Length: 277
Ligand SMILES: [Zn+2]
Image (cartoon, rainbow, N blue to C red; front, side, top):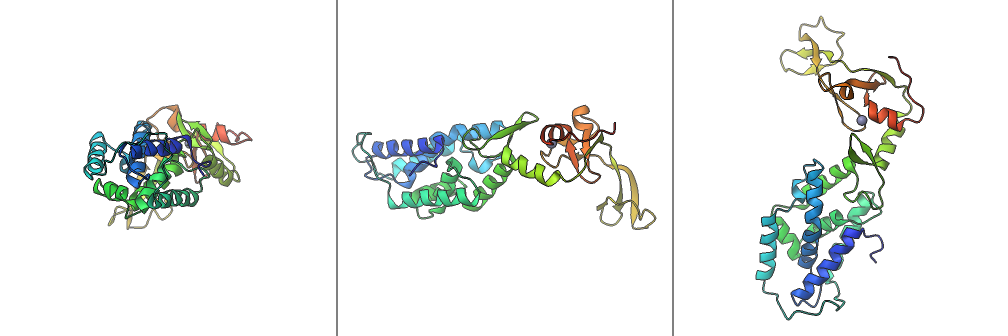
């Protein structure tokens, strides 16, 4: 039943079983899954943060972990410690958590079930003690789900080495499937190389809103601001394009409307785009 689980997710189950036996519980309850997750996900969160992400909902501080541990102990479920070799069954709530985790993976289009899906599963089992504890620590389902989806869209699965291939852009790991999908939609354009330059824009006097089409520059509602638009972003990787950051930031490819950083364009487009420069 765990064949779709990533190595980390399997370890969560392993640790959950261990925790349950330590607490003398006859079943693996949701709080044991949570303890297993905290053990595993602790390092994972750091890695996520280390990669420059802002993934606050998934970051359990030392104190949150302690609080949760304390609350679980406090619940007074400590029975006699069971030998860890005993193959403890999952409680019904825990079984639902795993079923939810599988659903969450599915809806995110992932073949593998990882720790992030287990977390969502725990949050979905609202009556479970784990969900209660997480909610008390400010971790809620909707926001966590949004954060995970967003983060994965950008950087791929948290466990990029397992199941999902990744590719490096500007030294950061990106989900190869995402990059391929983007490349596919952008292939139909002809890309030419040039230096990125700030754009003239029209700014609406009353509202300050920006208008890129400078044609109606005689319109009294607008004022022309030469070089008013000072940065753009690569449509694949979001790399900032500007004139201050050196060649890496101003060497770009464009189809006349959109921008690609040189690294993305030169790396992902099979036929090298023609060069104007
Ligand atoms: Zn790029």
